[in-house]
Image (cartoon, rainbow, N blue to C red; front, side):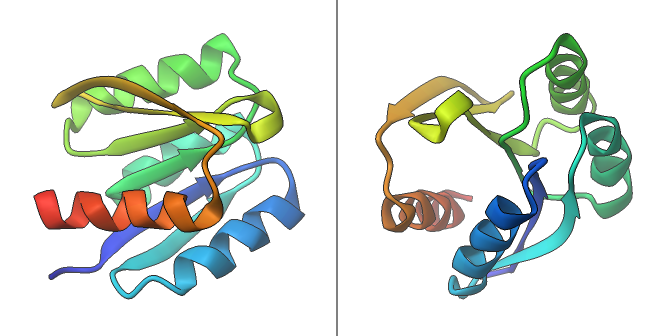
Amino acid sequence: MTIKRVILANNSRLLREMFHRVIDQADYLRVVREVQSSEEILIAIQRFCPDWVIVSLPLSDFVLNCISASIQSDPSVRFIIFSEGHRSLRIDWQMTSEEEISDVSLKEFIHLLEKDLKQI
C-alpha cells in the first residue's frame, strides 16, 4: 500500500500540530504541507500533489472556489472539510457525492482515512 500525502489547512497552529500528530500515527499517511491561510491552499495543492486536503479554515467563497477548482483539475484529490466548531465534517471529491459526518472522534477520523486507502 502506498503512502498517501496529506495537506493540513488550518489557521490555528495548535490544531495543525494536533492533526499532524494524529496522522503521524497512521502507517500509510504523511503530512506533506501545513498551510495557515486560504491564500496558500491552491499553491500547496499544485506543488505537493496531495491525496487528501484537510480543511478547517473559515469557508469563504475563495476557499470553496479553490476546492472546486482543485477537484476539477485533479479528480483524485479528496477533501475533508470541517465545520466551524469542528463538530462535523464533509468529505468531497469528484468521484463520489458529498458525505457529511457529525461528531467524529479522532480515532474514527483516522479510521476513515485508512478505510479510503483500502478502496483505492
